[in-house]
Amino acid sequence: MTPSDVKATLSFSDGSPSMDLPLYKGNIGPDVIDIRKLYGQTGKFTYDPGFLSTASCNSTITYIDGDKGELLYRGYPIEQLAKNCDFLETCHLLLYGDLPDAAQRVDFTARVSNHTMVHEQMQFFLRGFRRDAHPMAIMTGLVGALSAFYHDSTDINNPEHREIAAIRLIAKMPTLVAMAYKYTCGQPYMYPKNKLSYSANFMQMMFANPCEEYVQNDVLVRAMDRIFILHADHEQNASTSTVRLCGSSGTNPFAAIAAGVACLWGPAHGGANEACLNMLGDIQKMGGVEKIGEFIKQVKDKNSNVKLMGFGHRVYKNYDPRATLMRETCHEVLGALGLHDDPLFKLAMALEKIALEDDYFVSRKLYPNVDFYSGIVQRAIGIPVPLFTAVFALARTVGWIAQLNEMIGDPEYKIGRPRQLYVGAAQRNVLPIAQR
Image (cartoon, rainbow, N blue to C red):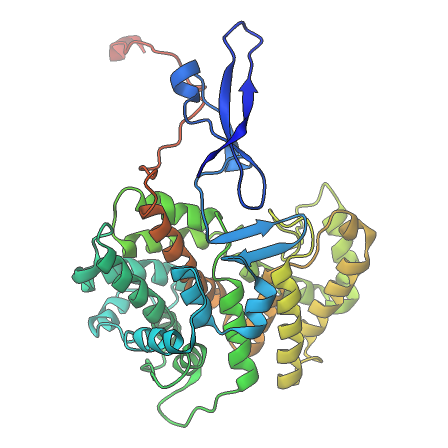
């Protein structure tokens, strides 16, 4: 990272001396002003709630252009990866920087497949949860517990430990999600079958049972694989920033990823697709398609608390490129399962049509986002709504690991320590209790 010849000059109207700040240029995207010496030279901090204008790191992994509606993994457009690669190829790309060749693909797939089982004791750990526990509560516990079972890969500063922890996490997340699902619905756990592809293996662990042969549906397996690819990484979002901040303390990789799982649970982040399906369910209870107009009026009413979930995005001010791909997959899945006439899916498609044509939404660029379509696809596949965010966590694990490893390899990385603007009481003295 080399500074530009151009400098940013910061001047003050209170008579304080001005200072020059280095300017860094990314390969693509906005320039960045380096403020690291600001406090040392001026005694002042910057103030940026939500980090709307602050770059917390430099990264080579993912790039988003929200205005263009562009998403790149290691320089590759998400559209090309989703159409031409499978999830494990995408994992290889995010972890190591390049798409695998034929031999690397075989080797990487074999390494992941050989780690799909989890310690048998995990089944007893699961029994400590109530059967009606939210799957994300279970997943937060299970992922954090991995560090108690795999002591040989918990040193975040050891490259070999990080490598085996990465493979273990990618391999075991589908097993853990499927176990959480089977536990909550009272069915026996299905062990992984390593001859199957990553996504096909997940589907059989989720939906097979010991009583009969499970037949894979290739359209659904491909849809699941695409969901994984589209959610694999997304720059410095809340959960990724959480993983980086947690890992900056030197904690083990399993704990850092568990922190990401906990952050992802929030309805404004990974829980958005769950909130979207719940919204569709509420409209269905109101009367379905015929009541969409009434629902839209409530959304437009500033005095109403009704929100349109699954539309718009914090970063994308254009159509989310992942949503374009997921929309295509959504219609493929509904067609393959004959669900276009299902009341909830008809409702979703009607809402999509209105949002794409109504000037209120178009002018505000409130386009359907990836959460809108992925929720519909997962429900059609048979994944229960409370499990949606766990599937998201499964997919995002590789991105979290890639970001964590990049941070550890960065010579400039330090333990995260944001500062604050203090607006509380000034120093005061404690009075004896009788005088308070």
